[in-house]
Length: 228
Length: 361
Image 1 (spheres, each protein chain N blue to C red):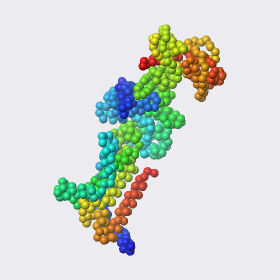
Image 2: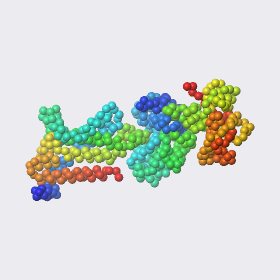
Image 3: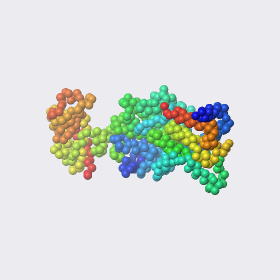
Image 4: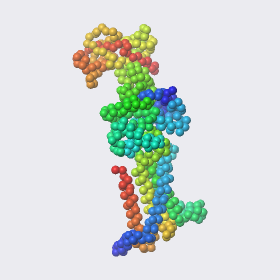
């Protein structure tokens, strides 16, 4: 018990003193996950809108498939991306394995189903008369999509934030395709798993507290977005 | 050249024909009312005219050109129209931004937007609400925002779908006044759907009766009201006395109609033997306590079966060997002491009988 208390106080010390290693790892985590969330949003908001507004055969099946992948294990994606980018893999020539870029890619694959599915759900929540109203006032298909996304803005923002939450807290992909290389691909989650295994509880706890703190901020943002 | 013309529009949904061969012409500056009961296809037709949906078959010409030629043509045509949907919704933004929306879509410059929105806000009486979120408005106010939002872009055609459905009488009066203002101020062409015939009468130049997805009759309100073209139209416009009969004689258009035990005199072109309906509006039936000699060709002894008062008027239901309804003032009812089981004479003129051909089936 004293050991834990000891570790906790030292961890808080590390955060307050802005320990270079802690800030560097946390900063990288934020960078990678923000990048992957931003890029995925740029793809999934338009694509989700397209799926929502277009009528096509097999639409229900597509949506079911998307929802099926909401909870896909991160290690499965890690393994898939690893095979893809390993020396002998189809994209091995790009030499991207164990770089932040491939970690971003892995996280993008991870949160794509979530962002697509929740975007579709967000748009479905908008009154069906809104798209008709927009078009009757002269909106083109694109302008109509924009106003419906705007009407669903709280749900859409919540979608993006949930995507970010899933990206920054995952460990499977970061570990398998990032490799936890110190000063290059080490992020909060991989650092915690390694340092804990090594018995260095102080750093693990410090990073864990930061992760929880990030989760807290994400939650506060989500709550603030609830329309009053 | 009509501004809007539909040719044989058909709409089929889930194997059900919602519209059947609807051909309509509406001229520039005209106020046209589509009247018909709920479910007749009024909304479907308006949605097709506004190019929100594609018809199963048929064509729509806007200002002389076929709108389904290209997507671009469709958007251009739609931008010259504005449609106030039956269930108006406002965007989750200020009243001002709601009204400015259509102008922003058309890339109107900011200065003009401010000027136009300001003018419309005044017209609909919502100037003081311009910065309020439109979601906080009442039903009548939302409808005013919806109309303002539609007319601010100065459309050539304004489509209104049941503009006063679900509104209280005060709000209804305000909306009707607003529509009257629009009609008077601009020469906007208006097509409005309503199930309220009196509203159609108050606002429209011309009326089309839509029943079961078909336009059954178009014309001036008075024409349709006094001379409905079919039994269904007569039923819808509230002609209560519709009696089956056969033309028994025709003496230079003065006909007698055999209705079984009785004969009704009327004016008609139909030849002897033609199966017809004799339609008599309750307002045109006079009641007397004794057989009086008058110029009216039709006089029947009748027994009152029921008296229902509606405001200043009384509805007298009678049995003359056939059922007949008369509408007379409450005062007359009291003076003549009319009540159930009382024997009276029901009198109406031959010219008050409208004769409709029965479909041979």
